[in-house]
Length: 114
Image (cartoon, rainbow, N blue to C red):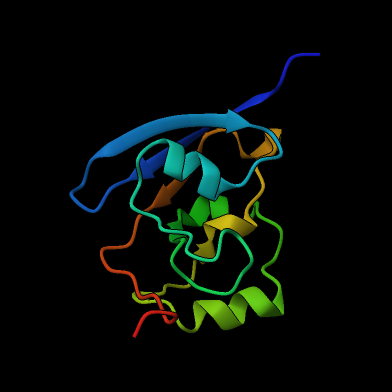
């Protein structure tokens, strides 16, 4: 059985649009890094930092599973958080997310580096 690919579009800090795709089941962070997006993912998806913070387009936000309390706590530490902010390491691609649109924030904050 062939992998199901999910299309994702990133809005960059300079207003550009980058289209990428990833296999269903992988994290949005993996797709973003593969597409050259400036998301560190310092904790490697362990939800111990906020360096993979993205802003999900409002019409896509409601389609995502709700953020856990731990993810919400990490988002409290992120720079430029909005009502539709999420950690990209916590978003697993599914066929229902085909076409997902996310914005890369203009600034990031890594609380592990002082």
